[in-house]
Length: 318
Image (cartoon, rainbow, N blue to C red; front, side):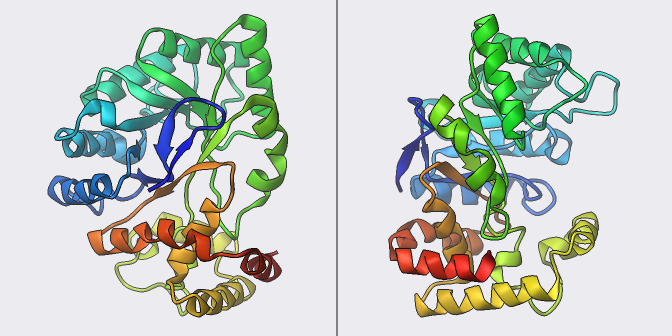
């Protein structure tokens, strides 16, 4: 397992990280989660990501139970704040919710601090000065060591850095965007200025496009799959054209490349993300240990992806 710095900063995280979206709680109980976490740690994964929003905080609780057997110093744990409940101050990036939300997360995680706390989404209803001062307070109070953003635009990240420098506040070091073969523009084009200018890293999610880049949806939605278990997600994907004939044909062509390398399409898709030097870690979301072991192999095959193969992938998907 390779350990990559988060941008220019000193924190080192495993190139493959472990995410808890749609798995801890709905698909994985505490005992199964512990087994997968043990397997992750045994294979060198030190980065574990969650949020207050996943399953109403249940994901944080299950993660806490799964990490208890490890030394805190050997772990990099992140959570995200935005969707904390239904009350008027339980959502968004007000200073009140940032502070109270992280305190509640730390209780569920049974930790004194997280390594990274993210603003889970931008909040146009709150002045950037308040967001920045709130995050600065979380770091200086010891509740988090670093802060970042998730699914922010480059313009919003730029504004955050500008305010940080004007107000002498601690700056964000990392962005957490969706990034995969089928969703590329933000990471590869929009964010280009911020990597060099601010030294930010990326912890990316959805390398398999919620399963589409495994090929399992080429002939419909199989029973027991993620989209079968989560109807709202299925509806969203159907509405935005992710199951279009053109998209499925692209996936079938990518499968041929994977077969030529004697690897699974899922492994090729994850390894492809790892080829981007700006990516600090790719978050994996798995529902069983066999799937997890299969995905772990992506770290070993990334060197099989030559420049010619990268060009062929571009030809298919762009």
